[in-house]
Image (cartoon, rainbow, N blue to C red; front, side):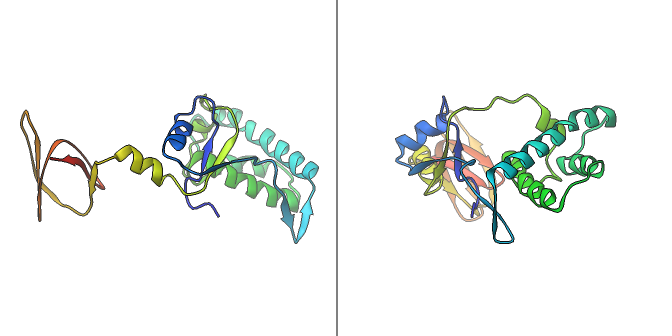
Length: 193
């Protein structure tokens, strides 16, 4: 079960690999193609799986032409629905295509109805190399990067004052002084003096 970011994709010039090593994050090389899929408790052959994936991939690639003709952006869900209406998919292909769609959602970090089809077809640079499963999450990297920076949650900021030596932050219940501070919708981050 994947409950959020659990992989580092590629290790060639990937700064996350360096950070994982620096902060002793447990990882294991994985191979997504070394898997099996069951249909009604029966294993689907790698050949059938590969063949279905290649068909899914070729159908998806037809989407570029559909996008040009639509003259507007579509979500990946809308695009796939248009493509599927033109195809005669077997029951097994429908099941496998849903599986491949989950992979698209994972790649795009969004559900298909929220993922841009134009964004999918845009040129993007990918990092090559094997994928690494992150055993104990990204917490060690975050904590290592934060160092002694404190994150303050549930503090309603009332006032921020700056001078050349410090930032003073006044909340409903506290006041903080820091050399620098970053505020966002979730909280503020400071290196308290």
